[in-house]
Length: 468
Image (cartoon, rainbow, N blue to C red):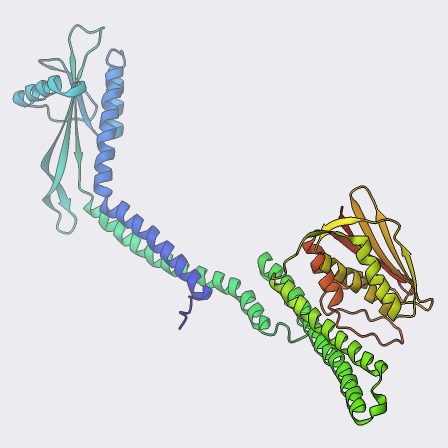
């Protein structure tokens, strides 16, 4: 059993919800889980920048001003010393290092890479508890930065000491958690609402189109009205056109069945009638009656062959047997047989022999179908003109009649399967409408040019061209 896929109506809200949850998860990780680490790294980077700034300005007459400004802005304790005494302090007061700490930090700076030594140590920072106004110890980390500054303008190295405290952000994290919880609920609700609105907007025209699509080929006046966005409008236009074509094909198919049924019934009736007459009446066993039966059998054979050829062409199973043959002789042979069997005025304008490469049997079928079509719609003068026009690299065959012609709006349709013109004439025209469609398929296989020129009530000229 085929598994049903998820509807777009539920898929879009699910995608929006998943996206919102992923973004919120990243916010929780970055702002809550990694906040302490990011804060600590930012603090260390900031202290290193302060040390680099002071080191660059160590010989400046405004060094004290720089020291005061940097310590106050960044809330750090900073002072400068030589190897024995404190020479300068920042504006923010801080406890001077003990004698042992002083030399400990100097010795570490002298042996550290780049003459910079950074040390972290845990401390207890006392804060006031708001609930009972009592002091309580809170674990914190003190950053102690020491840098040995060497400059060509100084007779001895100076040492920069910076102290800063990194306080745990537990209160900040709790606040962020509450804010993120509210944001999470809002984002989830917004994702579901927005996803639902968008899915409704997207699925409404698709649902309407799908509902009507089930009626494709069943109603003549079926019109798809896509609205909402361009793609649905284009799909609606396409399906409306498809419905028209399906209805046309359905009508032509019904006409084909009716035509084939009629065309089969008529010769079968004649064959059966003549055979019974010849059986019951010995005097009717004449060559003329036998010829009538043979003619009707040939017609049935041609009708069946047309249907088989159409099936092969549509399935791509028809193959060409390419040979080098005398096209002019082939045309004369067909014209001789047609002229013997029909009372017509046949004009031949074939003045030279022409050889071409192609499937002789299929090209003969093309020419015979064109000629048969001219016979069906022949004019009152009973004239058919066949021309062979040879150019530099092509030969063009034309079959002209002076019959009822074809209306201009029907010229492009004569090559469609099952199609027959609906001209106002009194003659009963037989045939299934397959002939010209088969001709088109054969000429396409030969990569040949073909077409028709016609004027209504004046006649038609069908032609095809083959490379020499």
